[in-house]
Length: 85
Image 1 (cartoon, rainbow, N blue to C red):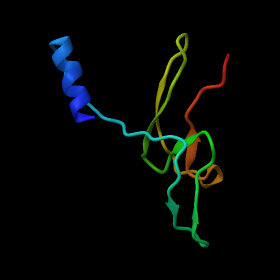
Image 2 (image 1 turned 90 degrees about the vertical axis):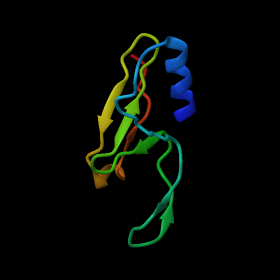
Image 3 (image 1 turned 60 degrees about the vertical axis):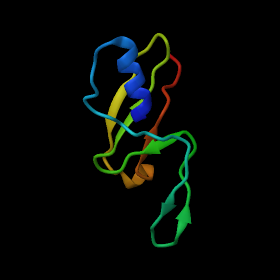
Image 4 (image 1 turned 180 degrees about the horizontal axis):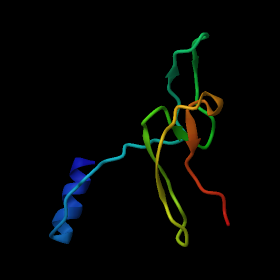
């Protein structure tokens, strides 16, 4: 990411990074719960308390930067794609 951002700013001739959001989707990670497990619901990103994420729009819709609430009901996750209008 460092190299990519450096190239973008070099190409543009201006700009600076103000905040980076590292947002993986459709991944698995080790969960430490009552019973050890590994997994993540399909089509989601991690949304534990304070985690930043991106819900991308399409060419005609907005994208959203979101902050996790750590909801156990949603397995501390949120969607990473908007439903079509």
